[in-house]
Image 1 (cartoon, rainbow, N blue to C red):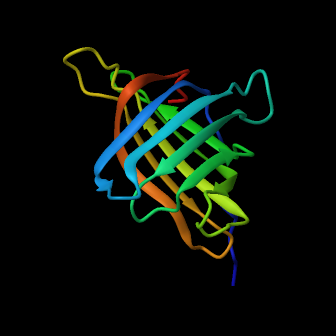
Image 2 (cartoon, one colour; image 1 turned 30 degrees about the horizontal axis):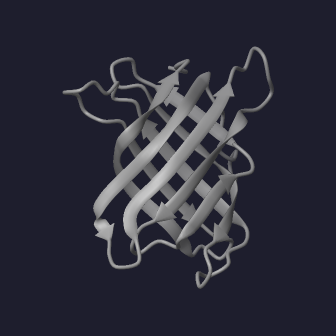
Image 3 (spheres, rainbow, N blue to C red; image 1 turned 30 degrees about the vertical axis):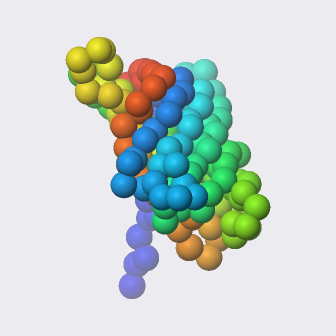
Length: 159
């Protein structure tokens, strides 16, 4: 019996930079304000480097997510696509700095998607979706919501 060749996770030429506040009103309560702040700067050009480089920070205060800060430590895969709504997906490793009273986590991994909707005064806001889990598979942070302030630019499309 052949086990086959494992999937290769190749990155494509991609770039993302910016930041802002994500707001999900249904994720607010007396101790969570329903927002997350994000700052990101990352890029990959296979003609210039061997691996994606950069970082992002996400400070989260959502119900049903651990309250604290996610900081990327690696970007293991980065892919972008689209021209009208440029979109990028990043995966990799991260740390989670829990606020007092929250569960400490180790061995964190993330999946992050950003859709750049090229917001104008009357346009659709950028959208951010995130999933963070620890080494046991326990979900720490998840959510998808609009950027209510700030801007994130996505470019250098891989396909």
